[in-house]
Each structure stands twice: as structure tokens, then as C-alpha cells.
Amino acid sequence: MKIAILSRDGSLYSCKRLREAGESRGHEIDVIDPLSCYMNINCAAPSVHYRGRQLDKYQAVIPRIGSAITFYGTAVLRQFEMLGSFPLNESVAITRARDKLRSMQILAREGIDLPITGFAHSPDDTSDLIALVGGAPLVVKLVEGTQGIGVVLAETRQAAESVIDAFRGLNAHILVQEYIREANGSDIRCLVVGKKVVAAIERQAKPGDFRSNLHRGGTARNVDITPLEKEVAIKAALTLGLDVAGVDILRAERGPLVMEVNASPGLEGIETTTGLDIAGMMIDYIQQRAKPGFKLKSGG
Image (cartoon, rainbow, N blue to C red; front, top):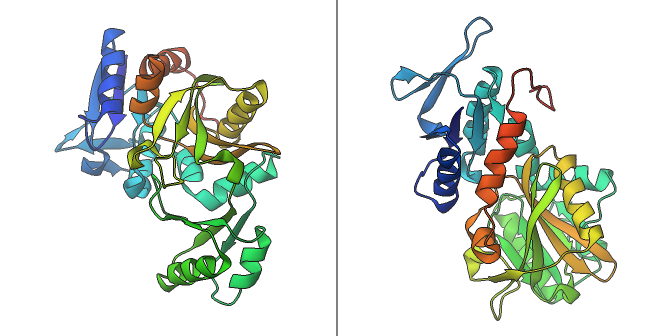
């Protein structure tokens, strides 16, 4: 089948691995920069054009859309969905997951446990906001932050007030979360494909930091997860409507807490750590699902 990978950079590890896995299974793989696409939106003959030509139909599309281009990237993906391409993560699910506040509200509504979280913008309620999440230490996050950027641990009340006020000075929306001390700077990244956790690693923050992101110098190792952690990860991905997701879980005394659900999880860290062919599993899932007559879960 013909499969398009929507990515700004075909040389990235995840993109190269998906291309290799697809081609090794006999598929034709094209890497398409979504920002170079433009669209004809009409009911009679919708189309996607790319660098001066109309694209042929693709049976499936793999979105590897960075957070900086979520708006336009998901618009392009929606156009492929209109044309009947199977999306490995629907556009509406990606936008749902990228909005940290919205995704947490949806997860909480479905009974998925999270760190206690406050959300604010007004400069008048700092003290009550801090009390809402149990006081310091606490974590302050920019809603738009990714890969640990815009995430600060405030260890005292005074520090928390200063960070919150500074972020508000940027006219930014912020999340304030309880700090899960017993996690000791580590989290569990569960990679969900379909309705299965196909791999899991424990990520540990570098000394002196509390952010376990591998992009920020964290380390990773294989880990066995409990049946409850597996159940929580799958439920979180399905709740947001994602076929593929990286679900980040904190091990708290009260049980597993979902910290974040990533709609475009990187493959390098988890494949390198586990030795598993995650890219191949994603292509196999497409082969099972991208059949004539499939329907979008969201209706588009």
C-alpha cells in the first residue's frame, strides 16, 4: 500500500525507522512536509497539493507532527482523512492530546488518576492556587511546553509564588501540580499501539534535575509494569482516541498517576532501550486497520 509520513524532517530517527519498517514489508513510503502542502477544500473533489502537484491517494498516513505546527499539521491530516486515508492517530485525537488542560480534564472525567492539578491565569489567586495542590513543593508548567521545557519545580512557597507570578507576567496559561516525591525523579513511559502496551521503560532524571525526559539528559532502562499500570496506560490512550501513544506514568503511593499522554512519541529511546521493533509494530497495526470501509472513530 501507499503510506505517507507527515514529517518536517525525514532524517529523524523515528521517521527513518518507520520508513524502513514500511519498505521492508513491501509498502511504498513517502515522507511529506505538511507545511509544504496546500489544500483544495470542497465537497466534490477535495485534494492535497504538494510542491506544485496534486498528490495521489494514500491508503494510510502516519502523522509525525511537531507541537510547533499542530494547527496546520492537523489541518493537512484532516484533508487526508477526507480523502479516505487511514490515519495512525486521527487529527481530532492529536489536537485533544496536545492541549494539556483539555486532555487532563477528559482523563479525569473518565476516572483516570492524575497528580492534583490547578489551572489559572488571574494574578489574584496565587496563594489559594498553591493550597489547592497541597502546597510546596509543587511543579509549575506552561501549558504549551514540551520535552520538559517550561517545567519548574518550586521547593518552597516563596519560590512557587515567584515562579507563578513570573509565568503570569508572560501572559501565559499555567498548570500547577503536586510534586510526587516518591517517584524520585523517574517515570514510566508506556508505548501503546492499538489496545496493547507493546513496550515500557523507566526514565530517570539526571542528577540535580527532576525532569526525566531523555531529551534533557535523562536515562532509561527496561522495566516490568504491573497489570494496573498496563490497564491505566491503555485506558488513557483509548480515552483520548489515540491508536499510538506514549503514556507517562508516575508511581505514587496511592497508585499509578498519568502525567501526560504523548500523541507523537519518539521511538529512539524506547527502541534502543528495549531492542524491540516498535516501528514495525506500528506498520503492522496499519496493515490490520487500513482496509476499505474503515470509519474514523471521531467521525472526522
